[in-house]
Image (cartoon, rainbow, N blue to C red):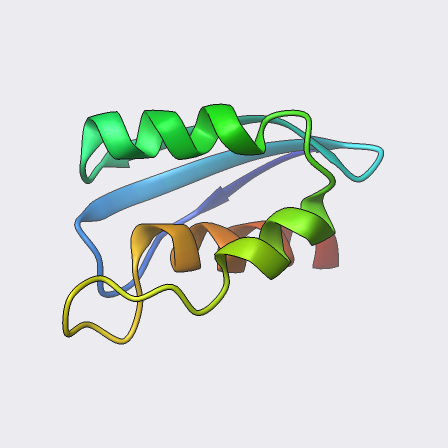
Length: 82
């Protein structure tokens, strides 16, 4: 299943997550800090979706209440709900 999410409160504009049998197959992010987001996408590839959500939820970017990793956790959670 592929799910597209529009992040809120961060620099990235769109996140696309592919999950198969509860495991993240790929993550694509448009906008944001390219190198960091490529690294995060690479790290979560092959990870159980629930584990990624647990690790990424609540991370903040500077003084913002959220971050791209936190928004990715929200995207994964939404994907799992569908």
